[in-house]
View 1 (cartoon, rainbow, N blue to C red):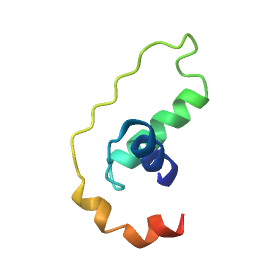
View 2 (cartoon, rainbow, N blue to C red):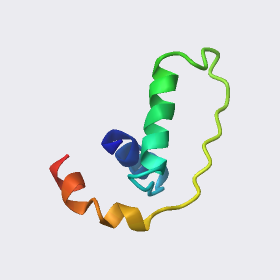
View 3 (cartoon, rainbow, N blue to C red):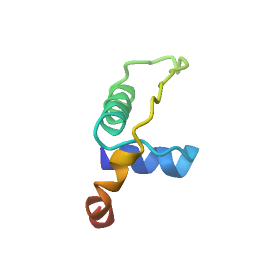
Length: 64
């Protein structure tokens, strides 16, 4: 989850919440790495918000 939140923030400028969005995106990254879309098909990830949850994890993100 930490990797997913950081990757999306750095590459796309989007802040995912660590509770739901970050974990969902981490699952998406894992599925892509496992070859779920072998032909590089487009994938849509719908981000529905949750930014306030990010502030509750401030110390955890500083350590990772």
